Image (cartoon, rainbow, N blue to C red; front, side, top):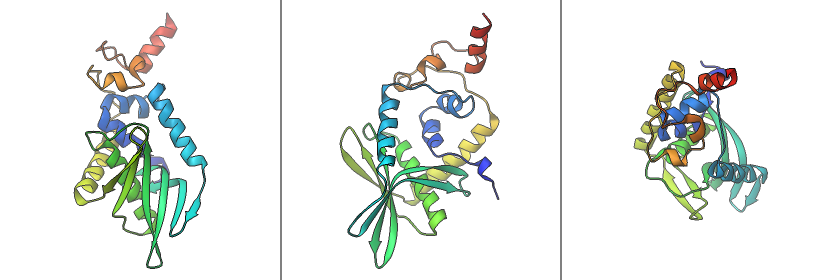
Length: 207
């Protein structure tokens, strides 16, 4: 059995898929900086969590629900979990809120699938699907938690734990992703070979 000290944030899965260096900076070196995009996303999540629970006919809505899975060794919080009543059973339907638009890769879907796996473990149910609401399109994208997505999620989770355990921050490599990253000024991707952010910031302080 694992303890809660062994659990990593669900959000780290998306960070790892987007950029290994970003993931290391946030979850190994513990550095963070906001930009307009992350601030907008944070505000959207905060508003969503603050609205509390409500009922709409055969749907109960819970916001900011704490999540945990010892199987995946993950912990986090769901933006929204809708409980749909069918045959006297309340089936969870997780909904993740994103400020942007659907992405070309599966990073958002993996994050949502991890939430579903947490709920399955916590509640002892099978969750076939959920949805992602995108702020730019004002549209819900329904996500089926099929075997392919579940395998991708579990494999990425294994990789995440191995990555964090190694505690090595990859060298920066500048590409088109860097302009969207809030850690651009801390990462300094155009200055390869600089070493860890902590060492660089310590060197500045010593001058």
